[in-house]
Length: 98
Image 1: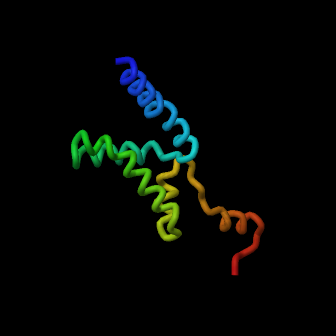
Image 2: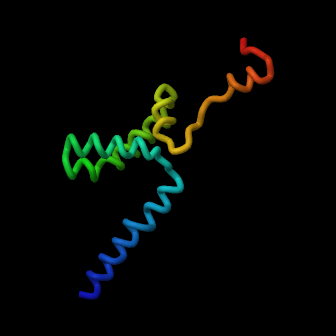
Image 3: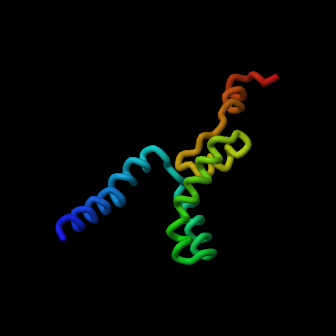
């Protein structure tokens, strides 16, 4: 029983601590978007939907980040919004874009 217990312990440590720390630093997601996703998918699919909500949200965010036309959705899903500040910089300088 020692070998299976060690395997379960390693799986728990990796799944609950190591992977969330590594992935969390690399890919930050808006807390409101997570709440909305969990509420929607748990309403639609129940407990299984609640478990699948965040992975599906990560897939949607990565997909939106790779396409320019969907960048506004990716910006909403990001924890820190990256806004386009070119227009604000032009207004402060007193110049206008041609």
